Image (cartoon, rainbow, N blue to C red; front, side, top):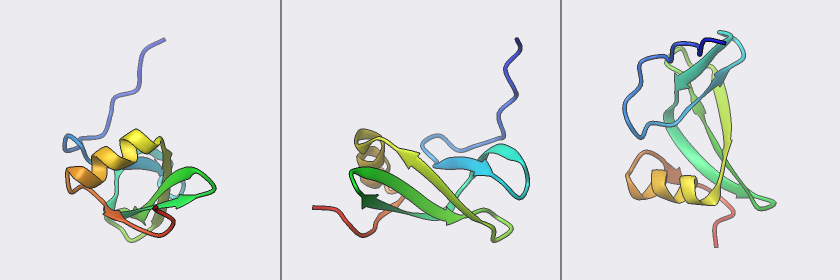
Length: 77
């Protein structure tokens, strides 16, 4: 099987699946990472203003925050 071509993205940028556009790896604008029930969820919008969310590991979430790609939301210790 051939892999699908990725959308153009900036390294370190948070991407997610856009349900409305039906596209993978759509960049998130101004993401905020919340911790809910031990899960790390990045929420934001795409360039058209559609809401998006992506679930990630604690290590990935901390890396995005450390690099300035996202802001800390609620639920962090």
